[in-house]
Image (cartoon, rainbow over all chains, first blue to last red; front, top):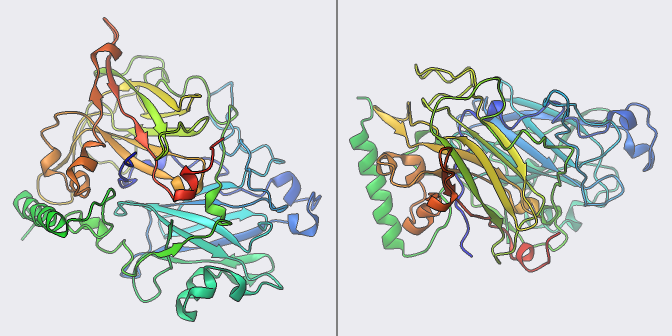
Amino acid sequence: MLPTPSQTVGPFYGYALPFPQGGQIAPAGIALTGIAPAGPDARAITIHGHVHDGAGEPVPDALLEIWQPAPDGSRTGAPGSLRRDQTTGGYAGRDGVTFTGFGRVATDPDGSYAFQTLSPGGVPYLSVCVFARGLLHHLFTRIYLPLPGVDWESDPLLAGLDPDRRRTLIAEPVAERVYRFDVHLQGDKETVFLDFR
Amino acid sequence: MPLTQQDISREIAERSRAYTEAGQIQHHPARDYVPYRSSLLRHPKQPLVTVQDPEAVELSGPVFGRTDVTELDPDLTGQHPGEPLGERITVTGRVLDRDGRPVRGQLVEVWQANASGRYAHQRDRHPAPLDPNFTGIGRCLTDDEGGYRFTTIKPGAYPWRNHGNAWRPAHIHFSLFGNAFAQRLVTQMYFPGDPLFAYDPILQSVTDPAARNRLVAAYEHDLSVPEWSLGYRWDIVLDGPAATWIEEGH
């Protein structure tokens, strides 16, 4: 069957798509205590950065979605990202123990975003989907984490990229368990975007 | 000189002609569609890098469940103490993959302007009235046949600032998840026969006429409820890598 075309998310998704704790992918009850079904890697990591346009200006109305395996490598995900309050119809927030693997964050007026999660199991990357006004069709990219022992040459995507372009996919450690990852939609530092076939 | 509709319509016609001459079917809009001015600095100039990895994380995807949606969410007319103003409609259809198989139990999100063409968003400065009985957000999970159903009101057309006298045709924004993250889709549903279609660079960014038609719902009289609402049907087919339409979905 022929696919339904994409259209831009537009400027007014802000009251519809973002949800409270959208960037709190790491279950708070696990991440704070370090109680860990998967060992010390169950402590939360923070990933933050900015989204820029082709003039280097911040993009204040971008929406980022994150999808990743759980720390144990499972890719089944779990419901509960948008957990609802059945009494008020509002949001109840995540339950603090379930790892759903899914996050959604909108950029602030200065183009910045941040989320907390747990390191993915089995792969060194998180998948990211970028939406924005002006973007007629979303863009996929990946955030690779420079974890100890990771060999970029063994990754089928990174191995095929020039070093300059490869760099755009690798998060920069800025503090313990904190990484920076900027998205450049266009320009000299343009992020590598992906097409899945 | 401020841009006029004539300027934009000329650019739309040029892109349409170039598309026909190229002779290659494109189902999705090009990201560098000049008539939509906001696209200029917000599209990559490097080609996308193709990933053909059967182990790619993007071949799996997020799941949602009954914890994520309440019973009131599919009825956008029932979320406030009073009835919203406007023409009450039902929009229903199925979410399918490219093999025509239903996408089951997945999240469908919609958002839209009210009957006057105003979003409940503080940055929407269109001087049309807000409706205290309408926010314009809906959600549901698809059923076993991939079906979804929303009750809402028909949104109004509204002006925007792409160029002088720019108006968006009435539309409902849709956000869809497939069985794989790579099938993700955000799009807009339009209403049949809208006279603004030809003037709108966002709809016209889909340069293939048949693909453009797939963004337009069908009025279906049997879906209309006597003394109550008008019915529209709109089926959605999610694109995605071949692997997502060969394996059995959940």
